[in-house]
Length: 485
Image (cartoon, rainbow, N blue to C red):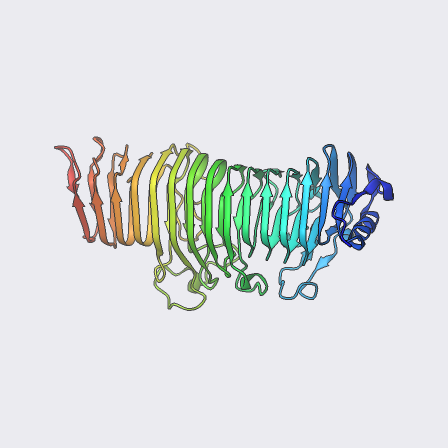
């Protein structure tokens, strides 16, 4: 019979909280007792407990009281290797997480304690993905992570894979800003995930939604879907909320709301490339404050990492034949976003020509672009052909069926909005401080521009470099300005 109220105080079973004793085997014994009892609470009173992988079972709560610290063992053998034999179709392999569950139900990690992965013992490893995650769960149902703090993760910090019904509430994650690939929360191929009231300060992307690469045979079977991210603060890292680049199983039905990003390089970041496949669709972003970001919005169909610049099948700027592994971005809604002290550009969106970003709706966006007097650290998107930018406006290439409304951009240089190879785009209520053109268009058709008053210092409303199909209605330019030039 299950006794889910049973409490197993680990110190009653020989586990030492002295910060020195390796408790890996003793903790496993306590877990075994709880499993035999049908579940219960594995309780850690205040103390510092050294351990390798702690594998939780069904109907089990790991409770870390205030003053408790779990210290990741420095012995690599304390983190069993996960292989494709261990988990069929899991092609990445690597060491098990410090806290782990597999094929379990009703699993909770909670309390006010700390998990310290002591990742500095691992950050020099040549194979990043072999490093243990702080918390890693595979094929689990009804998972709850709440209240705890996690620091110094060796790799991605909180990584549920192919899980259903996951709640992550009120946790704090802190990894050094220069720690490699220490993403915060990475639901991969999960469904029904709620992330709320969290503070994430890491060395890579803060929250990332993934669903495997073209080679990830397990994850790509499951889309990442029905995800909410709300009331979170995100500091440092390479992105606030990121989708991809692993997205072969697809990512859909995502709501990101009421969050604050500070110094996250990019704010909302979506990335993929040809041959990866998968569809990113029905994404809603609302009520976001950003400051000191490199670019508030990035969508990149030419993600370059771990690929050769010579692979023109991936990185050609010409149309390629459509196939099952052509990635898709569509139906993305962004509203009520303010971004201050932006360095590179207001947005940098670059779809692939054979499958443009389709269905992009941005409403009520304010961006203060300050640029940098120093050399730009990197490009706004990680694509071989993308130029470095500094203090520029909103750039979009290979987009269709888009609506851009009520946007104000203070730029340092260039047009407020640049459209390349765009189709059926409506721009209304744009304002800026530019001294160039408000809008620059090339290679486009079906561009409809309305309700815009050109900045008094601008050259005019529209720079149409190649006679693109554009219609202007209800706009105002000054006596010494041109509507189109």
